[in-house]
Image (cartoon, rainbow, N blue to C red):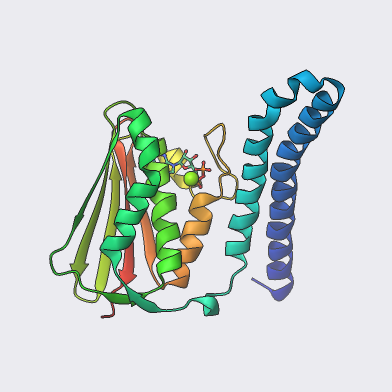
Length: 225
Ligand code: ADP
Ligand code: MG
């Protein structure tokens, strides 16, 4: 590819992203403005729109946070000694209120050889939150999410396995595209941001899925003790 072609490819990606961000932020803003206008005209209705407005503000906040993460350079990674079991417990507890309302379960099993290792707790936590949230959002009744951690030589393999609705080949090929979502309240940014954080930590991510059966996401990270 010539330099000019590469430049025009980059510009096209930036243009698409800018259009996507503008669109995704404009939708909730339009809703907020509309509900505020109705509330101004009908003070009695104000309270009933409060939750919707808050939902929409949260949506904008989460889109902006995801974009801030994308723009963080790899050099901002701060390696620390990590207790992965504690992070997994934290993430399970954080997402547990969702599981109790849908009668779903989160299990986790850690390799008995797992010791502390060097990585970045902040990114690790966010990676797990995104993957476990997606797994939980795919579940029906009697759904289960399993988080498995295995140490293999100098690699740490974390698998997040669900028995949710799974993905077709065509859906799998779209994962990680900005704004690709099948959810009413999705942003379609989670996987893209997760992939970027895993790249920052010198790791890899892989999806295996069968429609109607479930999904297994495997994350491989360097295991430096
Ligand atoms: P969002 O969660 O906001 O939709 P993501 O980037 O996290 O955005 O995910 C994009 C899409 O990938 C989801 O809308 C969903 O269709 C699909 N997906 C991701 N993880 C899973 C999973 N574990 N099981 C089934 N579908 C999934
Ligand atoms: Mg998601």
